[in-house]
Amino acid sequence: MQREGFRVTAAFEEHHWWFRARRDLVEAQLARALGGRAGGARRPRLLDYGCGTGFNLRLLARYGEAFGADVTNPQAEEFRSVPHERFLAIDADLAQHRGTFDVVTALDVIEHLDDDVAGLVSMRELLGPGAQLVVTVPAYDWLWSGEDVISEHRRRYTRGTLERICRAAGLVPRFVSYFNLSILPLAAAAILAGRVLRRGEPPRSNLRALPPRANEWLYRAVAREARCVGRERIRLPAGASLVARCAA
Image (cartoon, rainbow, N blue to C red; front, side, top):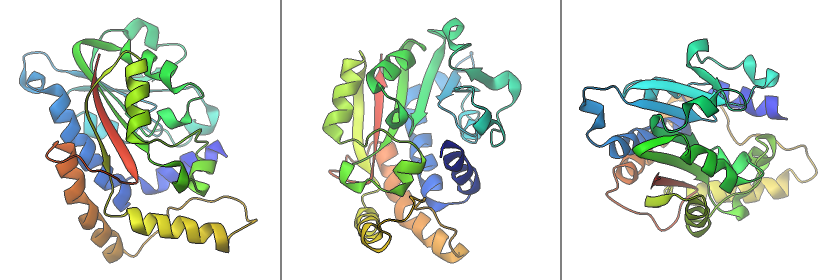
């Protein structure tokens, strides 16, 4: 099941509208988290915790020295594209990097963890003085679908539960908001319909290849919202996903 999650991610994360819009949001959050560090004499160090295939290191590398960290997993290796010198094994390498990163990202990661607070504590320990953590998670248990099953999610979140676990891990939330509000009705309808129409069938991903024009239309429909949230111009009251920017 985990291999299937990696396969689906690798197949869609470059071009699919959902991944593209999330990158727009994350890029804006990186700029907020770094503040003036990006233009300083020292190149910032950035870590994508739970990096999966490693695709998002391309984004982080625009802002400094980028690394990816994940568990050592033979099922993931065939899809992972992180250069060897930029990949850190969570169980073996991270202890020597405590307190060295300017930004850590965890993009749809903590919902996979049995103990999300302990996971956030581990991420906090990687932050240097004045550094920040950017987290995204899926929202609302009632949106649970085959995507959650094949990705081996443990839970989905509300704004309140996300804020609480961040504080429990010793982090200070600076900005927390839902995003993907514009697609929430469509996502809810598709998931609820799938529960009825595919009852008894094996779980499967919600991601589908779309005609290029439809994919581009959906991207444009959500990208402006994603950028506004990422730049912290608005806090949305609902959405299919959540973002939190936290300080140690």
